[in-house]
Length: 263
Length: 263
Image (cartoon, rainbow over all chains, first blue to last red; front, side, top):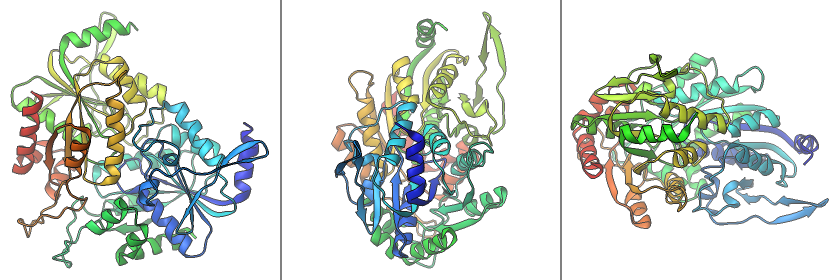
């Protein structure tokens, strides 16, 4: 495979690659990546969303496309994947290529080549934005992404817990690395508070308070948004109803602010 | 290094190795691993807790030991690490060996050898139980653990969200693999519900309901415990006060049931 040629092809067709990373899993990174893609698409941009979480892909569930398999076409003697389109977003995920009940028991180098193939061998067409949802940690996938692809910037997602933030701090340090780093756009604090449906005026800071602000301050990066957690948000994600997620006014507003900063 | 010899030494000194895994991060796996160790130690067992989450170690934070460095001793011409002891538990973590602000940018093979060293080169002494807290996913660390060490069983941790459970299902499939698998002890559902402090009789199923039961049913494995989430639980973890975590009666009771099953 001629990596240089394919990389140039990518850059020609895709204006901006935005990486969404978190260091820690379970903080809503995939939801934030999908929400950014939804908002950008609704504003008229041409958007792709790549689920690069090789070990725990979420895009098939979030967009209610579990078990779907993409079409493959031949072009210049090479096979390419046709991305799915949902809410105007071009979607590709390792989850579309494997049995969703089977684990991906790959050692690092295989995971890296899997990622490169997903990016290079998908027919994205012309994109204003390719949003890449990455796995937790600072391992092979991230190293490959930073070394082999030319991303415009990275957005970090955290919840307010110290335990999450410690890992995010490490991920920020990696992405700020002088040799392989890229610009840090800012941090999104997810699961910031919970308002019980019976007591909508009360706010419970279950996972702690102002962790995102502290992180933003410590690393001198913008706090892009604070997103509440509630049963509707979780159910919308679990049921693959991204449109219902965006129907939550607090969530919609938070993503609006976020995409204003990116675009 | 003579791996066979070291493996036998391990087995001689350690009666049971219990792996705590999750597939997905951020579901409270480290807290559950630490809680199991706390309860077993309080019941008089000799317990070790190994934090094998190479990319996001949590044990230094959970036990309020950030920035501490273990003593190293020479024995038969080889260097060994002395584990820390907290609440009667012998603790070792990659977090004790690295700068807690720096990411571990290791490709898979290096992460695997790091894990083997942490297990083999720590002077555990005689243990009834070694609890191993693993990173999310089904990658290198898990493969190495299953191939090179003789674990008695694995406990899975999930929250009730479909998004978490999809990943846990994959991890269960991996651990049940005929070639490298080990017995599945059961599943712990964490963040099962939230009761607001002002309305203690109300239960909000923020992350969905009965996901753990469904998973247990689908895989024909026991549901070991359901653990609620609240500000106190999160704050106790964030502040490294594992004793305060266990002072929550609902949490204490849940871990009691859990360790009854293991021991």
